[in-house]
Image (cartoon, rainbow, N blue to C red; front, side, top):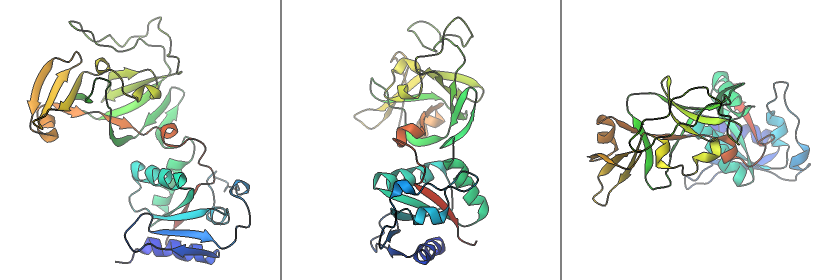
Length: 276
């Protein structure tokens, strides 16, 4: 079936004098536009529209190869991962949207603050991604099921939340504790409650099991074993679905822009509305 969004992107690129190649093996991206002769270096093409997002003409005249990315469902993981893949392969991304509403959502996601749900004086609120939080002891973090999880930065001075064998979680109180060296905590909210706290976004790299209420891993017999923060057995399940039904859910890792992009994404993307 012909992809109308891809065709719109191809037509726009050809009007700018670019040649388009389209792999026939189903590879991604489905179309790549390249200038016949680069008229300027990529670093010279930084002109932006009045709203701060790059224009299509600017992107297509940058001298870079441009991936044509059809986006009907602008889910954050999809948009950010495609831009990440294109940028890592030295391609810019032309996102082709079916309507103005979808295009606006993509532009909002990719303009500062890049790739986050919201930001205020406390810090950022992150989207959750497809990865799970891996723990230094092995396995993955878990929390009680039945709640909506969200990762948020917090610059407020607070005590770290930690769990100790034979004790309870530290209370979430404003004491004489300072903010961490990273400048802000990274809190995991389950509905309105903070259930885990890390020393900033970089602490997501294999935190210790005691940072979370529960953990889980797959045993040699393929069953899922859930343990508490101290490693004490809680229950075993036939799979992740059964584990959820039993009252435990995996902790998804947040999408952190600086962990995906090693620099600015200015000049690396633009959005085209197919029906414009």
